[in-house]
Length: 395
Image 1 (cartoon, rainbow, N blue to C red):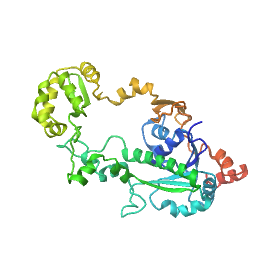
Image 2: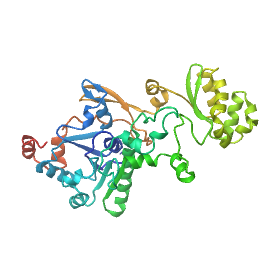
Image 3: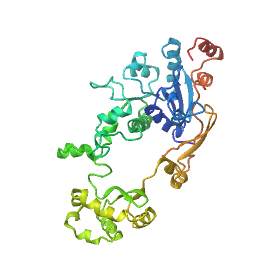
Image 4: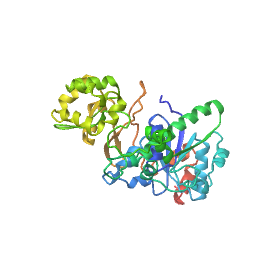
């Protein structure tokens, strides 16, 4: 039995942030019913594609059931009301106010089902001067300060590669839903959850924000350097690049012995971590790379990891996907996708519960795949009524 088995989630989200949230819930046992418009989730048009079908959509909508529904019709709204009455959670990431305009305010949801947990993702939250603005990940990265500290100081700001504004926000909402389910066990009451992309990225800005609030310092781009630890950076070897972090004085002294530069331990510029941070560029990095550039990665890795110092080669996506450690951790799942008509390999769940199954259960649903099953089993419609909804193009 998976931890969320018995929990039913209505997933009205699309694109990335919301489906990523409900993917977590589905992976761990929740019955997630993906409710799409008649033309489908916008991510169905996003690459990469295989056989003309979106592998992107398949990845983040695995383990879900799917129906399509016209929520602008009164019949479609009635279908949704019946589904809400028999569900535990409803999630949406419409623009703020859209769901209310359709007639589904939190007050209405509570009237239908007092125990419902209503989670929403938006760019800027439910209140404030920017609440109704649309938002994509790159906007949240820009406005949270994240882009201003990403990249090298002599180059333009850049966004982080993956869409952290989406996936972090989705993960936060999944966490909030689990909290609300736990609270409901004690109180019997539902909950309204409001998670914003801008809030999320601002909250994970680590020491960059407190550098400003505590010391008045506005951090800038520093490449791969950590502003509070040195050496903590990427370095060149003879045959590739790697990263290393000496987060303690012991690591630092061990590293100096590895590179046969124990004289650095006596250098007043490098006595403490604060000293090393202050004098890292250009002096200390130049001293380190004078050694690393003369050695190959295999030798460097053996020496540094042998001393227990954190080390990692900089891998491309192919190398990461073929990494033995990730294979052992079951971080690539194989699933046959009926939309694609073939098996695909997708990232697995990083949440490992020992003794529990850790594998994809089913592929993402094709559009309207489970209309009849869900309308009968969850909403109580008869075959005749379902036929009428199909004829009216409600489903």
